[in-house]
Amino acid sequence: MLHIRMFHLKLVFTLMIEIAQHSKSALHPNPGNPNQETPYEIPTIPDSAKPRRQILLFPPGFDSHSLKHFKQSHSIRKVAHTCDFQDSSWSAAQTDDAELIVFDRIGVGLITLDDPNQLSVLIAKTRQNRSIKFIRSESEMQLSILPDSHSSILDEWDPDQDLNAPTLSPMPRIQRASDHSQILKGFEDDLKQTWAMQACGVNQLRWSGKGVKIAILDTGIDLNHPDWTGRQFNHRNFIDQSILDLHGHGTQCAGLAAGFSTDKHMPRFSAAPMADLHIAKVLNPDGSGPDSAILAGIDWALSQGCQILSLSVGTQMADSKPDPVYEHVARQCLKSGLLFMAAAGNDSFRPGLIRPVCRPANSPSVFAVGAIDRYLRLANFTNGSFLKTRAQIDAVAPGVDVFTTSIGPKPYGRFSGTSMAAPICAGLAALIVQDDPDCLGGLLWQRLASLAKRLPLLSTDVGMGLVSLPSSRSNA
Image (cartoon, rainbow, N blue to C red; front, side, top):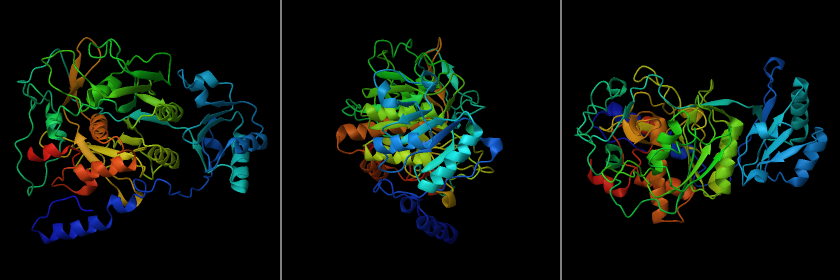
């Protein structure tokens, strides 16, 4: 499927054909067929690189009998199940004495090996009897934020403020659209809606996301923020002892997905202000978090019946290939009617440096979101599609100087990054589900694709285009 507009140049026409032949829709079996299985190879791990904690991917049909056999084969005495913590928070520290932790709803395990030789034995036995589908070391994930962000914190809303001032907007880091593109006036904040909401067509107030469950996996949330004080939402902590957001990123993302200001003079800055938020704290105050916490958060979101999940973390991998664990988990989510969305990452510096979509957004079954600015120009920092590795951008959403909630004494700010675009996309998806409650999982993915606003940019940069509602088509 082709997502760039026809130009009258032969070179561009040739490029269009090439992109069409390699489009992500052809590479992605998951939205329409999440049951398709992918064979994985058990890796060879040198003795010098054998950490204690390993992620296990269980094969299809792995049940209690299979678990019992696995325990006996590897002399595992104590097993913990995340389903046992359904009514309380879980963290790996709470199960230090367990040798194996099973994430029941996603078919993944976390095993702790005190002796490095145990891993060699585990891999050898697995290759022999295929008791485990895939094994890899637990990794640390990091927030998809800009290290040199020009984000600003605001005391109060000021619609007349010049957002293009160099002190507020990283405009030098934004790539201009092609000279052949339509000259756009650009979207401006007004008293009713921020530019991000206008660009996505959020002007039908009958769509508020009410009754739709959105899971935000991040650094927690600021319960002392005036917009969140007294608001009812579910939350679980999978990283430490408190849901309180000491970083600020989780509060920003929650605001963009489903924030609702208590100030009646504040414009609408979230996509789905009445959605049911499910906040999973999976990251430390420094913005990092282990696979185990993130997987536990996903497992919990499934147990809560969430329809959309937003995750704004990423890791650049040397080979850029999708991770079998997150690909498997995302497929499990699709089967359960949960659309897994993730930030594409901010590691590029276009046009000279374009890095591939980071993990886990590079998984074919994860909806990867890039960022654009108010002029519908691609954000320079947005990572791109690498067709040979299947690391693909699916769509873009506003992610430059977007207005949202913030922690600290100043309750609002403007922030940039693909990590801002992902929760906006999640909120827009919630509006679609509210309108059609049966539009879940792969169907929701396809619906987002059909509604995406085509942009005069390469599909390798913007995927299907700008995630939007039908009404936004009249704004361009």
